[in-house]
Amino acid sequence: MTRYLQAVTFLSSFDRMLIAPLLPLVAADLGVPVAVAAAAATSYFVGYGVMQFGWGIVSDRIGRVATMRLSLVIAGLAACASALAPTLGALVLLRALTGAGFAAVVPGSLIYLGDTLDVRHRQRPLTDIMRAMAVGMALATVAAAAIAEVVDWRATFAVPGVLALAAAAAAVLPEPLPGPAPVRGASAAADPHAGPAPPSSPGRPTPVRSGAGRVREVVRSRWGPLVCAFVFVEGIVILGALPLLPAVLQEGGTSVVASGLVVAGYGAAMALWTPAVKSLVGRVPAHVLMAVGAVLGVAGNLLLVLTTEPWSVLLASVLLAGTWSFLHSTMQTWATEVVPQARAAMISLFATALFLGSAIGTAAGSALLGADRVGLFFGLSAAGLAILGAVVVPARRSQGG
Image (cartoon, rainbow, N blue to C red; front, side):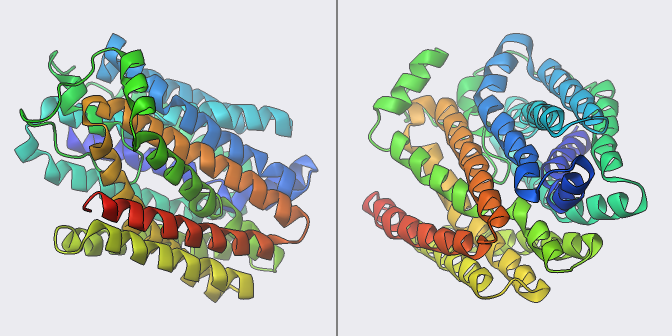
């Protein structure tokens, strides 16, 4: 069971990151500027973010395994069709559908573990899944660049598409028995970089049962909308930049493969930062971890303002991975606590805000890249992270974190 979930989460992370080194190649082949071709990355994040909440509703109605199989079929067909897209418009639409399909994989895997394993036995498989995701992110840009160099950029999209269809056919996991999934699996609808929080204990508020009721609970709460706003900004200033880094390198003369290898430092660094953060959780206040993450992100973006040589992009990728590990993982945990009676809805909305923010960040960054003002984008990102840190750190501290 766990190996299958590791495989599909690896595939989801791989597909999400693979477009980064391909943007200049797509632009050249389809006869559009790189800034315009970046719409294919933006649309993917939109589809991925919008469907975070939708797939949870579907899985409650047709079952966890059936939802996983359906989502993989949609993602696989759309990814394979992306390889045949005749125009940029078609590619943008198909990448949005691919993102919408893969959006179910990670939360679906976490929900499945929440439904089938006692809390005492979840940590090891959850850690294995997080590790598989980090490896997928690290390999995506390298493998995509290599396939594009040897074959063609279109073949790069087809590879995860074929694998997704194979994974759908191999989805023979037993369907979980009906149970208190809204509580035990609530935090499993988390974003792709953090594991679920502990399940509700008997002393916690009774969860709201209806989907609309859960959303209302989040919207009416004091902290739910604020935390979603925080992560929306985070998506703009962190995830929005990642798909553009290989294009920045390639415009400076770096080869496609070398640019993919440099940006792979982000995924590799994630695998190193994550255990360091875990070792500090419980010993260092949450607001301090957030402050460290914000400082790392500001430093990484300021470095990119000064220079976009391969060494600086590699170092910035490592620093941004640290930002994600310190700031985002801590914010993710905070999100699981603010509306405990509607945790599933809160985490789904949290993830949606994150990826919609990343779509806006990529769109804004690509526009500035096209205007040869990418330094301005990284400068604004540094300022945004500084402001975010200045707001979110005292806010978390005020809650005792």
